[in-house]
Image (cartoon, rainbow, N blue to C red; front, side, top):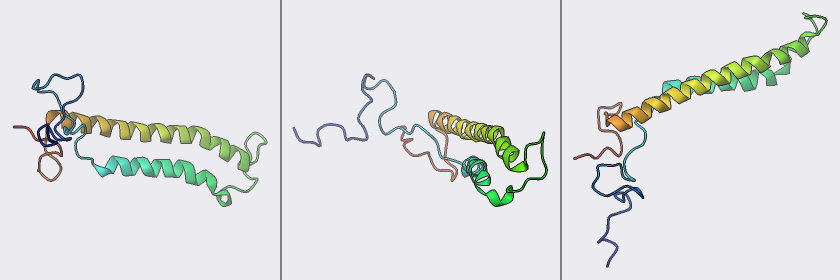
Length: 123
């Protein structure tokens, strides 16, 4: 039996799924085409949360004080909840985009350029 007698690696069914049942194979796309906008916004939010606290020239002075605490300290402490909020928004953006892409792959919709999504070879 030669290697060409059996199905190719892209046509192999998923283990545990009966063949011919209309179930997805290894070549079926799990996600539709990506839209870059949400990923770019998430990257900018995470970059701000990381880079701004790493620039001490923007906050290395004593005034204004808050409850006797110099600006240098309370500014850094203020970034803890801000970073958490920015990370949460970035997570939400990426998660909703991933859900949209998975739904597009399940529905077999077309890509951004009007062509069928990758791996959407349906008869």
